Figure (cartoon, rainbow, N blue to C red):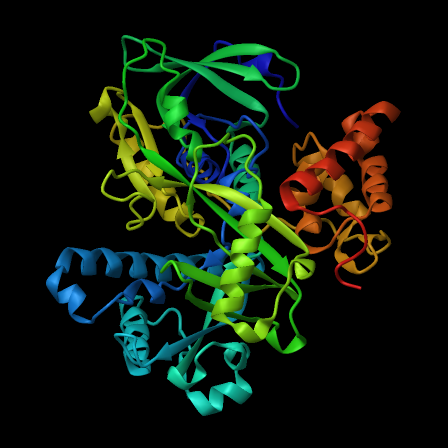
Length: 524
C-alpha cells in the first residue's frame, strides 16, 4: 500500500522521477528493473493527465510514410524522409513488442483510407510502404494491406458510402492496426510493477521545489496533496517526466535559473458516439478542412471522433472539452463523411487533453516528428536532469530504455537487476461477484474492491476511470456510483460523509470533464 510521505523524508535515491504518466511510470519500471533505487511521484493520480487523454493508437507506422503533396518531397528533403522512416520503423517495432508481451491490452481494428485522384500516391504505393516496413521489422508483423476499387468498397467497406465526392475516389485501402485497451491501465500496470521491483511510488504527491547540491545531485521538496504533509528527498539523477508541466517543473529550481522552453501544449478533444453495427471494429482516417488529421476510431461497440488541434494556454489542471470544440468536430466529420449524419444528440461522452509537443519556434503547434524526444537538461544548466518531450504512449518502452542508458552513463545502479514484467495484470477470478453495470460485465464489484485494496487509489474516479475501464465504456448512473462507493468504503476508510463526497465528486467529474450527466446506459 501507499507509503506515508514522512517515512521517506531525508532519503537519497539513485533516481527521482517527477510525473506519473506513461513516460514516468515506464521509466521508473525500467530503472528499478536495472537495479536503481527509484522514487516516482505524481501530483494527481497516476495516468490522470495526457496519458488518459490520448488518441489510444498503437499504430504500425504506415501513415508516417505518406507525403503531403508529392512523392518528390522526400527526394528534395532527405532529412525529412529519414525522420519519417525512423518514426515508421520505430512504430512497427513498438507495436510488435507490445502485442507480443501484452496482448490483452492491444485491441485490433481495421483502418480504412480512401485514396482520391488528387493525392500524390496510389494504392500500390501504400502496399509497397507496408512491405518495406515488414522487411525492416524482419517479418515479425504482417500488415494485411488490401486494395479495393471504389465500386467494390462502396458496398463492402464501412464508411466509404458516407464519404464526400465519392466519384473522386480511385481506390480504398484497408489494413489491420491496433490501439491500446486502455492507455491508463498500461500506465497503472507499469507503476505497480515498478513498486514490485522496489521503487517507491506515490500519487497525489507534488514536487514543489528543486535545489541543486554541490555534488550535482538534487534535493526535491515534496508535499502530500491530501494530508499536506511535507518531506524532502535527494536524487542523484532527476527525471522530469511531467508532460505538459515539464516547463513548470523546471521553473521550481530554487535559484531561478532560466531554462529554455521545452514543450508547447496542444489541446486535443474527442467525442464518443454509437454507429451502425457494420462499423464495429473499423476506423477511418482522413483530413479536415484545416489540413489536419480527423479520425473515427472503434472503441468496443462505440466509436470516437477527433482530435482538435489547438495551442493551449489555459490551466493545465482544468483541461476539459467545450461545446465549441465538439461543434467543430461535428462539422468536420460531417463534412468529411456527409452520410454519417451526426448531431450533438449523438455525442455520448467527450474528453480533452493537452499534448506536450516538443517546442520549436518554427512550428506554431510544435515539432511533430520525431516522437518521444530525449533531452539532457545539463546543456541548459541543470546537470543530471533528463526529460522526454512529445512522449507518445506507443513509444513508452523504447523511450524508457533510452533513459536507462543515459542514467547508466552518470551513475551505476546501487542494486542488482531484476526482471520486469510486462504482462497485463488481471483481477482475481470471482464469478460470484455481480457486475457494477448490468450491460457491462467486464467490471465487477470484486474488481473495484480488489483495486481499492491493491492499486493505491484515493478516489472513486481513480478506480472507475483508470484502474478499471468502467468510465470509458458505459455511462455510470447515480445508483451504480453509490454501489461502487459503498463497496470500496471499508477498504479506503470512508465514513458516510466521505461516501457522499466521493459520489458528488464523481458525478461532477463526469459532467465537467466528459460532458456526461451520468444518467442512463449507452449500451442498452
